[in-house]
Image (tube, rainbow, N blue to C red; front, side, top):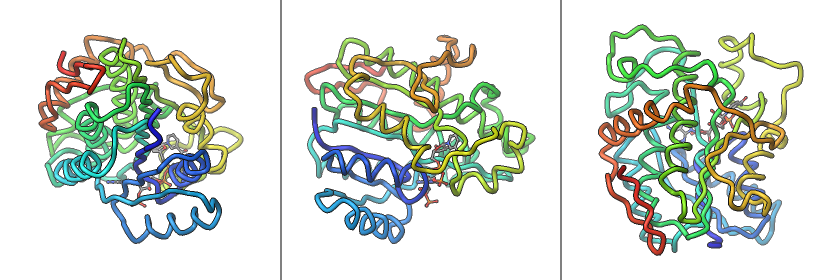
Length: 289
Ligand SMILES: NC(=O)c1ccc[n+]([C@@H]2O[C@H](COP(=O)([O-])OP(=O)(O)OC[C@H]3O[C@@H](n4cnc5c(N)ncnc54)[C@H](OP(=O)(O)O)[C@@H]3O)[C@@H](O)[C@H]2O)c1
């Protein structure tokens, strides 16, 4: 398998720990981040902890489709086909804001950016590559309402917006796994646990009922990402949703609705301008249908 791993959102929390452990495992880790100063500080920190670490930093603001396109082009230009893509970055906006492309910001950052990045890199993946997406258990509370993504006057509620974006992560993973079937490339997603990170303090207010008795630190919260990225036992497993104990679980009924997955896929492709046909070198994965 290719030793090149791309991860988004490596500057803090789960992504920072995941990056460190991928580097420790011998991967060349390309950290795609919107804040290059913070990313370089993390690179230096990991280099101190893991002397043999091979870490690179690239700029990518997932809330900007142009930035995602530039990042994907740089990856394709500068690196051989990837062995791993970790869609980790995520956020929640407490009030409705629009991305530079005019989409609701939480959905744009958590789903549309990763959707486009994955599509643009799908023909630059090694034949045993793994795609790992950090979703959330909150997807069980999500429903898809496309109007909320494009209509600036639609009622905004942070929990609902975040849950919708995380439902989209799970649906994207399942639709991706179907398209990648038979290629050797896998796509899985996960809930990391309720993890004490930058995301949570602001978020704590809105999801209070969901907070479990024990909150994980980032080290513990990164375990399922690391497991899905590296564990030999995961080889051949695709299209699954894993919990914070590295166990496969049934995703929400809505997430398993193939018609809805396809509707989301088509809408996401339309909105992002993602290539409708992406052929994986040697694998011929067809992402168009
Ligand atoms: N923490 C939890 O309890 C929990 C639970 C379920 C799921 N998750 C998921 O876990 C993943 C990691 O979150 P975390 O808890 O580690 O949160 P975090 O500490 O806030 O880290 C989030 C990362 O995403 C990056 N990011 C945010 N917006 C971005 C953008 N527009 N473009 C590029 N990068 C962006 C942040 O970069 P900056 O440094 O530039 O802000 C940061 O590196 C997310 O997908 C989140 O939804 C977390």
